[in-house]
Length: 472
Image (cartoon, rainbow, N blue to C red; front, side, top):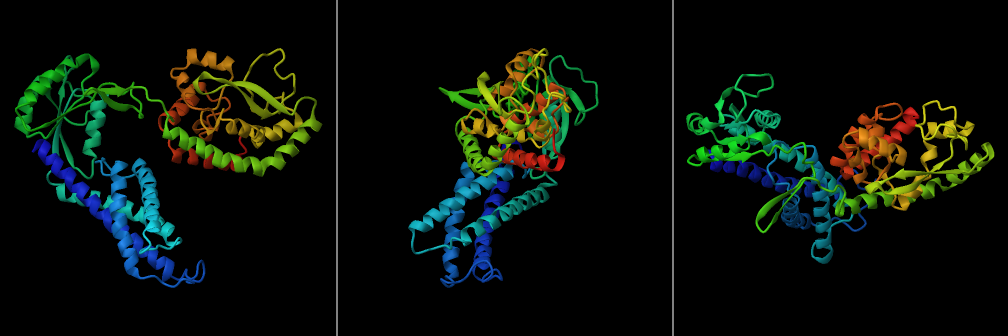
């Protein structure tokens, strides 16, 4: 079957997605129309002062929107075949559908023959997202049911960790059922069975042509280590006479991050192994979130900041604010602002040391400030200045950064994004005496997996931890 049969199956899923999306959008407009004009909510949350428009207006809008939305979905990659539907795909759906709804509202604004209620538009969007999601999950199940007796048969060449992961992933694939036929050892690899193999060991890589013909293989997954890449040439030579997909897994997973970009120069494919996170529009989105949240917080907490400053002045001798050098994005040093919670001579005789849970150097008010994280509030000014972000790895002092970069693998990567008031490590309890290696692991997870949704989640978890746990 090979390449052609696989493309047929992918086309089936894409057809089902287009059909389910169109039906979901139509249903969303009908439900939105009913909620706005015919449901019990009328007269409670909104009125009918302008009367009930003809249903045909919403049917026309639904038809036009289906075309616009599906074009937007294509641009967001939502019709690209995935192993399963969920997780990050739903996050992309939220963004794409919101843009589709904005375009729909814009078109109806200029096309006066069809006018949509300003209340109905957000109702349609809120209904459409779960309907589209359910439709896509159901489409996967239909495809899996139709194709369950005709799985694509695949062979893995290479006994690597990546090869095993791909083997197990394909076996678990729902929409496009796969069957693992076997594994062929690469150059220099042994053929003895071992724990973790997704299927049986059939032989060596130089037998791949015979195995493809004998077992009617559809896909050959080449997952050879870097030291054995010469085997790829032999695999390609033997597979050339057969109608089979040959896919190559570069043994670079330890180097390539999730944000790795692929480009071409004069027709030559180029892989960027070290992408810059939060660059371009991602950086604009994150900065916009910082300003949208920080400006109201500064206004809201303004009186509290003034009151705390006065109490600190009366509580103990010394300045109200504590300015400390911290290392931020790209190793730039900035002055981080905090309310002073310790005595002025706290590090006299000790030099730079980490604060402890019950630090004797704290002032009477400092313990309260630390318990409720109020000493961090002035850092909102650092966020406004662009020196920090609301969410990111917590900044460290230059003294500790110099030490950790020599001792902790990957520590430098933390400084490829702005430091934050709170971070993924902090909301997961990585604070206090937790080893710096563990904190760094969580920080690098955030750097490699940043999304707007992750930032919002961390902010919500931070507020919850402050009030529920009184974090130190």
